[in-house]
Length: 82
Image (cartoon, rainbow, N blue to C red; front, side):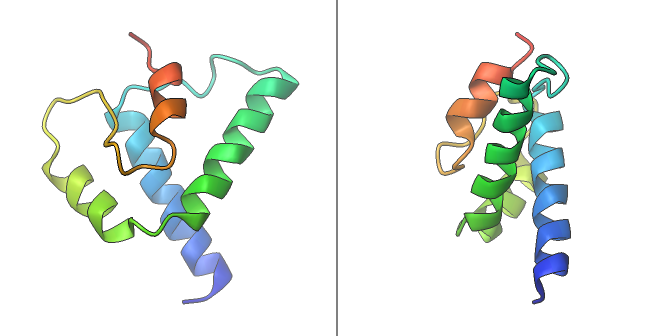
């Protein structure tokens, strides 16, 4: 898989994870907020749990908590709207 294809796939997974966990990416538009989003993207690109992530996203019903295997789990918890 090429870099751009992998990047697009991971960005899609990250987008789904943000939506599923009800996380706000627009909550902090400062430099720190932009840096936080870049860090989330880099963590997602380096993640080795893609199959688990896809499975979790397809099966998670109503949960707002990210899975523990996610390298962005703590970040998503902090960004949660609740």
